[in-house]
Image (cartoon, rainbow, N blue to C red):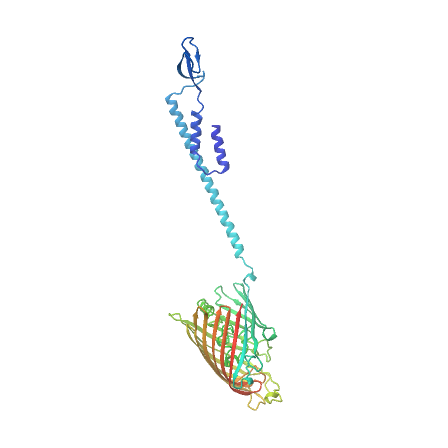
Length: 495
């Protein structure tokens, strides 16, 4: 029994998971059957009757004999059966012990698994617990251009929207933007954008989106940001096909931005549509709400208000999705306020004395519409607006309130192949109205056709080439430049 106890103790202390019944049975039987008394073979000498333990001459084998102790017990059949029953009982007891050991081992194993799972969840939670700056992103893009005059009076050209359209300008960087953005919490997102082109660092965007709900359907946007007006005004220059925004729209909100506060509402379903239109290179404008409206200074980007009067802007748009997957977006927009123009002399235009003007400002209001059939593969885009704006009088002596009228139409076709994405396009625009952000708010007349091809070589690299026929007012000399033909190239890289 001491050997049996030693075996059990060893089995439990080492955590051995192998069955122990067979070893125990063997040990028990071995303990009862092993080490019998030694049996002796005896031999007798016929002549001397002497008994020997080894064979020899005249020795006859008597048989095998074993030593019998005086206290040796001879077991009866009943006793042997009783012994077998005890052995069977011991075996059952040992089986119960082994089952108990297995149950304890399983309980320990389950406890260890739960502990491991809890540890993994804790470590996973620590990994998922990000700081606000872990969600911060840095990106941007750069546009490198080259202009080449072909024919006509291209040397006399000047454009308020593109300083590269001037004489003696070849290579130049049109835009160099660096963007910082990120979700600080589920209810706050910040966005900052700086401009490094032309050697002057300036702030382009600096705002926070404050969300009222977890779906982010309702939000306000205080700070320096784009004005909810038009489609092309809100479309990023990194996504736009044409080299510049059309003058009829850009003349109302030059540089697209101002200081103010706006409210936007975008249902969750429409948020996904806006995101899809941008991420799939369909030239979307991004999420500026199905409904967007608010107040802003009205004097232009990074300019102080001059008349203690704010502008009000509002926009409604909706991107429809047809059963065949085609997207079509349409909407209306407008703004109103009073704008104070900058006045001064302009010897090149024959203005030797600054025009008289009302320091309280002039009516500045527009209303327009947009419609976009997204390129899948054929696309069509158009906008038009009408309104009032401060404007230099015909005799160039004073600022008056004048009418504006203009818009554009653009056709495009998207081709995807092994060489990248190709989008040939044609854009025609017309505008009659003032350039209110230019000194003395001169009247501008624009008739322009642009034919180009955008080639997205890789998601981060894009090359565009375009020919333009221009008939536009040089707002510096106030002379009309007609039938000027130029070729422009742009390499854009995004990061």
